[in-house]
Image (cartoon, rainbow, N blue to C red):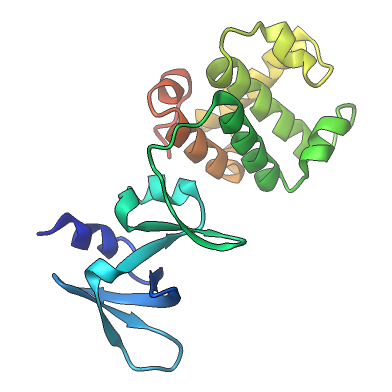
Length: 203
């Protein structure tokens, strides 16, 4: 069976793109997709003319979609996904911080400016960022330097690392699930390094 068919089968019930119009994928055959759009009758579309709509690069990783059939939804419209486009470590860290803030329900400004605040979401976000930065993003940096980003000391960093490790080991399921998208992203950006440093088998 054509692998394109297999990949589209993962998107059953999800949205696909055909001629810049969104449809719900109903079924997949060897040469066409059957799609729905509102109250219209099911319609066949040539499989080579369709693309799978992903809301983030993380979706591409999770569904293991080839870049040739994936498009990313952006504020400006749909763009093709360049799976092998190199990213700098700084770009990756910014993407991870954004994911952390989204999961925590805070803004980047709040994360950086309210370093004295002990609000639960802010504390958790700082803990995850410090842990990921020291273990994966910038492992050559000292723990004290990592903690200093949030005006914290070495002991605070160690507590943050212990908190995150306990969550990943299943001792705090709520914490782990709350930040699931962050760990999916870190695994996609560092597929070799991240699993060696963190317990990501639960994903």
